[in-house]
Amino acid sequence: MKTLLPAVLLLAGLAACAGNPAPPAPAPFDPLGAYDFSTNVDGTLVSGTLTVTDGTSGLRGTVTTDVTEPLRLSSVRVDERTVTGSGSTPDGPFSITMTVAEDGTITGGWSLGAMSGSVTGRKRSG
Image 1: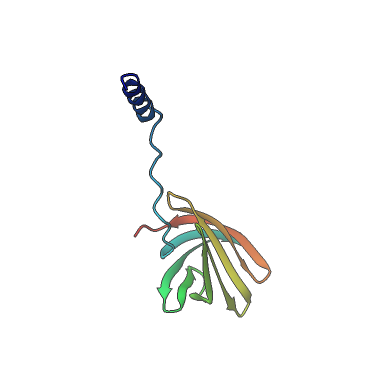
Image 2: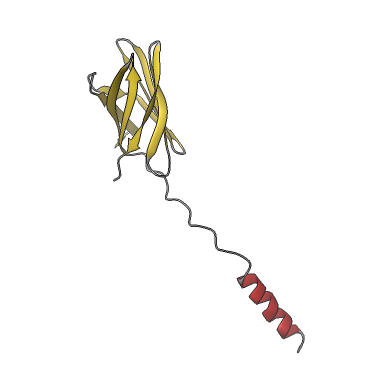
């Protein structure tokens, strides 16, 4: 018994010093909110906002830009930290995809008919 107690205390001390605790897990991603973005369309810088809300039958979305009327998205999906929205316009199908980094910056792309481009920006807090 006298040799068992020091061995147990030694093992407990080693276990306590085994390493640093793991950093806390990041907060779960909340897709709701406004995503301010910019893109280049035929050489013109265009600013816009994707707004994602919680509707009665799932997520809803609207895209507004400084050169177009608001576009209601018929589908909004979230896969981990990537938000994808799609809808229809008179010029053809529209889609936008944004991946949100932990710091709120966004990267992604869009397509409208035969046109496409990249987007960069930031998700608003709150």
